[in-house]
Amino acid sequence: MLKLFHLYAVPATLVGLRISGAAAAFAVSLLLARNMDTAQMGQAMVLMSLAILLGSVASAGIEAGAVRFIAKYRQAEQLEKARGFIWLNRRIVCLFGPAIFLAAACAIWAHSAWGQSPLNVALMMALVTACATGFLRVGAAHALAFGKVVASLAPSTFIRQVFFLTALVFYISFIGRPTALQVISLFLVGNVLAVVVQWIWCHGMTSSIEGSGRDVSDWGEWLRFGLSLAPALLFVQYARDLTLIFSAWGLRSEDVAILGIVTAIIAFVKFAVAAINQSITTKMAKLIAEDRHAELADLINTSNHMKFWPVLICFGIFAVFGESILSIFGEPFSDHSNLLLILMLEPLALAFFGPGGQYISLSGRQRALLPAALVAIVFMMVAINAGIWGFGLPGAAFGVAVTWIAWSSYLAFYVRKQTGLDLTFITSLKALMKKQTT
Image (cartoon, rainbow, N blue to C red; front, side):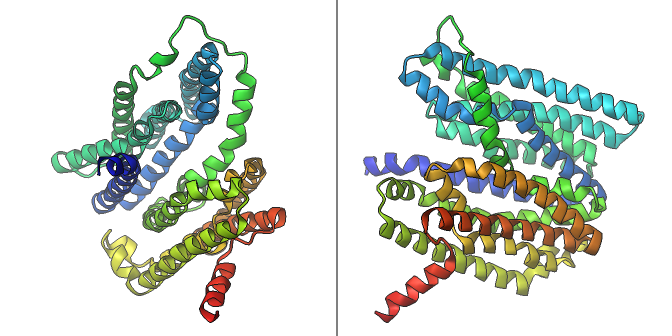
């Protein structure tokens, strides 16, 4: 019994953290929708997304190689290089974070008297927040490199959301309706507190590599590796933030708020798809490494059925009850159930075309994701704004959906072209029908 507990304790904790963090984020969206002016809410959502995305810029993406390089140097007893890697990661955030802030501050000051505009002050707060999110990213990568999986995930996935939610509840209860400036300020508080918790939690983590010297001679390799992974991580992990930022170029703030709520609901469905993909990762990696193609195909077929049918059921639920679900957030949102159906094409595409990105990464072909992700980001930007120009808010949602259909179908096509393996649900459905007739 104790052995089973140790075996499943960490995975169960990780799933619990993700679900709890998603629930807290949903509660934040509900509070904002019920207690803010819709235009102010739209501005706040864009500012928070900007802070999260700029956190990646603040770290230059170099922390993406933490697991690979720190493990490599520890195994080879090149501890001075491991220390150098960690030192450079932290130094880049310390330098890039303030540099982003100062450059943007100068641009805003040159454009207008930013100190007299609440929105411009809020933008400055978002840039400060980006420094904190950069530290969170680097700290999470280092914790994962030292095997501290829970310490890596918890601060950004759960603790930040809980602190932010608590601060928001306190503000609304005792002060009143927040503006975009006040929301981004509270978000900054949540991020700073999460960084403090992360530092306390991981303090002493690097004791196994302590020493006097640091070697950063491999900095070029570290940077190239991080930059090669950055576009794919940016597109897959922060697609919702990209959606809100690109949409803000052409939509009214009120419409951005509506899109933000709908994408938050869709994120729950996407989470279920991602969870099933994650659950088969270990076995999938083993089957790929051992070239057990028949068993791999069976595993993918089973997971495709586990994903596609529930997502299709969710589509039906949104078709019937979409207006009622959105009415929970208030009157401005209830008339946009059509957006739910449009954006449900995203998880449907992910479920239909199979785990293409996952297969590419596990089979050692992850470099193919770099150009695909760069094209996908540009495609999303163009598709969203073309959709807005033609059809307004529904056009923006359609632009997002088309982007994910193109992304998922391309990955499935690439895998089939390179390996002959068809990951799509059509093959999974044929395999099921064949089993039933034999």
